[in-house]
Length: 115
Length: 114
View 1 (cartoon, rainbow over the protein chains, first blue to last red):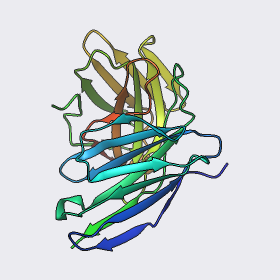
View 2: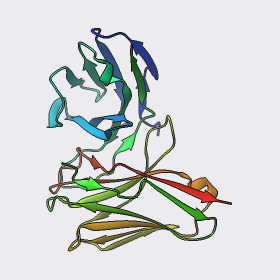
View 3: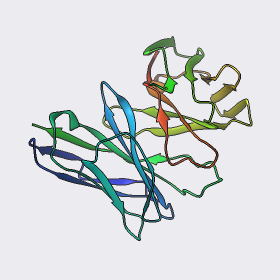
């Protein structure tokens, strides 16, 4: 099976712009979760999508949003970029069925730099 | 409010010896715990997990121990190899079935010396 893929791998944007990141989960996985990794804050949960619905949400401002398509692919959008949004953005997929303990499998990440 | 803590930022061990990485949590609703290994500029790689109904899980050189009363878990790597050098994250989820949201510790950098 192919792993989780993320595009693009690297992005450079300027403050005030917006950005869209894409994630394709492992075939058959219906849950996609997004995380932000920064040196100061570590790995922080952004949100999770399951069957095109947001199922969990972390403590990030409304500038961070996402969506999931019927083929389980997911996109994450950040509007009005700030310098502090510079980070490695990771997505992870899992089967997602409630009641089952599923590990998440991570993609390689998208490195976003905001200038 | 850090619900998952890895108090040792780094650990150095000799090749062939045991590596023990520790993790503490505060939220009693967590019922599933995982360890991930991460190299720079890559996504975390799943290593091993444990459910709160168990106190030990083994997979090859990796063993995870869970002490629910102390809200503590540890990862043992025996024997340690130079290729194990990486950042190790523990993560937790819960309550039951809600595994889409993982709370991570800050990570421990393990260096295994040849």
